[in-house]
Image 1 (cartoon, one colour):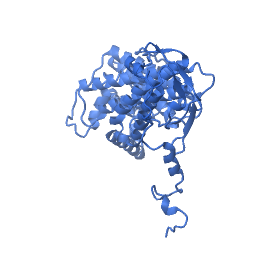
Image 2: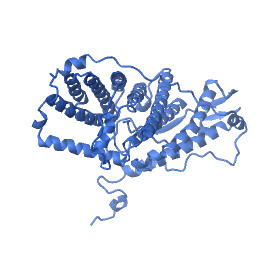
Image 3: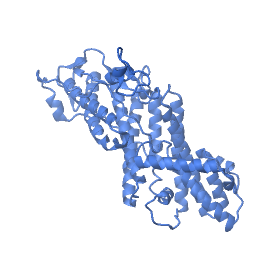
Image 4: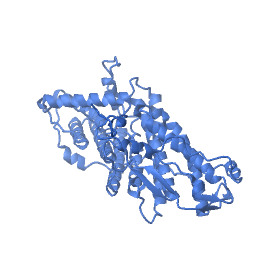
Amino acid sequence: MPFPFVLPTTSSISFTDYFSSSTHPSLPNCATTARGVVRDRLKRHKRIPPSSQASNLSTVHSALNEYIPYLFALDAGLSGASCAGEEIDLVLVKELEVEWRSTLGPSIPGREPARVKLKSLESELFFTLSTLAYVHSLQARAQLHTLYSATLPTSEQRATAIAAAMKHFLDANAIHTYSINRAGQWHSQPTAVDISIPVLGALAELTMAEATLITVLKDDPYPNVVLEDRNKQNKDWMFKGVEIPKVRAHLFARLCLASAEHASKAQAMLGGASKTEESLAKYIDDLRRAAKGKACRFLGIDAELAGKTGEGIAWLRGAQKELGFMALGAGEETKRSGFSKLKKDWQEKREDKKIEKGDGWGTDGGKFEEGRVVDMLLKKWEKMNDTVGIQLIPSSEPLLASMPSGREYHSPKLFVAPALEEEAIIRMRAPPDPGDTAFEGEEDDSADEEDRANNAPVGAFPGTRAEYSAGTSYY
């Protein structure tokens, strides 16, 4: 958690070929330069190793923030609206054509996602805003990764990281919601699935589900207990049992159920879209399961605090079912095959390695991590119930059917379209210097890279295409 979005890349264009302005003749030139910086930053980010990309997100973020006001200025000029209190006369010379690489569409394993040709300034604006929303989600992911570092963070550091991640989620949600409302004016769906209405709606619900789910993370001590238990550097062999007030446990359960409802809506919306990346659909389903399982755990904690250990155990077994794990009855743990235990240990070690490397962790929406917490509590409570106070364990199905409704925590933020500063607008009244050319980017075009990759013989080692050319012998 959250989803590891892949930032798209784009082709180089010059707005001066498509727009002209009599009132602000330098606007297309300045917009081209700002876009060229974004294009370069995205391509360089793509070439950074995945484990090191988190530290580069701020540079991509700043480039997008500098470019987006120019897009809204161009849009204002076309629609006749004012920008920073000034009217911009913009003439469309010819229809804008641009290419973006689709990262949420289906792709062939081992190959780059397809590049999609788009027309109109609206498509350019939507892809740029979506990229900014992805950056916000990735920055939230980087903040949450600090909670699982080898050196456990303090309570203040933990609260700061969670608050920063929450803000990024709400910012991403505001951008996706703005795009959905604006897309309601479309007469036809775009050719890129990334900016289609069902996908934008699913991403808006997903970011709200993630923002709601982490509201309980700051005050939930159980994941931290499991983390300390498997931390090799931890020398504390015994720890005091964690305590959660009864009212808060029930409140946390309702917050988790609200997150699960948002994830269910995202799942339904994504099902109404054309083919999308399978990993996104799987992540949304796993996040929904994790939120539902977490709600069951908190309801179990609420029951156990009230002295109903048997009912608490039933809730935990219900949590295992919601998470998609096998719910074991009392005494069935000893019957589990050695292969199953070995497989579970191997999965735990693999997830720990992913967290340590910072690449590929949490792609299950936190489902596996929640399963560890449920397993820990289930073993503890079953042992208590078998030795101290024996209570009957009811069936979990009726309990799952009687779950309360979810409770919303966040009020959605509004995305305010950024406008250029008044000084920048004034400077663009002057015509561009004839000797200055707009900066379109220094990096190679993605099409050239793709052609080189596709022309390589099947099975050839990268960089050895020349050895397989005509007139050469392998032996």
